[in-house]
Image (tube, rainbow, N blue to C red; front, side):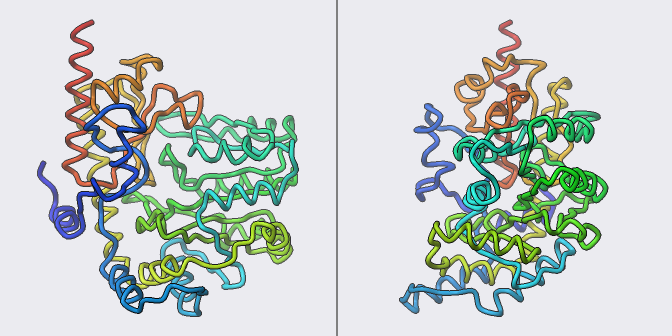
Length: 402
């Protein structure tokens, strides 16, 4: 597989084999998928080392030898705010920022703070599985609005969505932006339409923006915190984290951004029973270093993701033209519909036992995507090439048998 120079240099410098390192993606695959020697293309986790500045600050703290209670210093906020200014074009005040161990914890907490048992909580499927759980596991009514696949990208039918909000008496919408797994970036106009509907029907909106830094070349991310949407700030809470951008999930540090003072007060009262006693010391140190020094590293990573996604879709479509692979505007995952070749009932067995791949199955994102799989492109191009080869070989073998 011939890589361009930027991708080759990034992979040579940062790629590492994570097998045998207590890595969920690789070392639990046999237990979770029921087969040995699977190629790990599933969970949104990478095979790339973090930037050198992050490694350095963590080594220094280990050498210091004390890991007691900590707090976010002024320089932390400066680094985070500057990153958001430069990457997302938004102005954040330090007072707006709260912390949690992770984005999933945050929206589980927020569902319980902003709604009552039995209230309608809307998600837009197909979507990251914990969105489903945040409603169902907390005794709320899950309201499933299904995105529409049109012209090879997922769209919102705003009239249908508004009718469903009214009919189901929705109180909270959990929004994924950029959207995982479909790869959609929502435009300013789409976000304004969505927020206007929320305003008309007194619906809070949680925007999970954890994939904001993974934007495919030629595209632009728009946050709900954009100044042009400032009229809606009393409705919105934004969740983001360095955990996805810099692969720091194990350090348990994420942000809950609440621009409205009254809503911050509601959050602070509501979160008090969860007793988040301290910050993650290593998470704070790694985050600050990443935001201060990680831009060039991220450019190399995004170039690698774009390269891998392009290779994967071109190679698979050349072999099987009836596959449906929606346009990826953002995230580092590729969502593929095998429905023209395989029934939903056979997707799991085919991927695991015939292609030898550990993937995320579309049925976990929504009932309408049971013939889809999600593949992770934040990895070495050789793994992506191997995944494509395994799929092509296994599917040709199966089709020839028929």
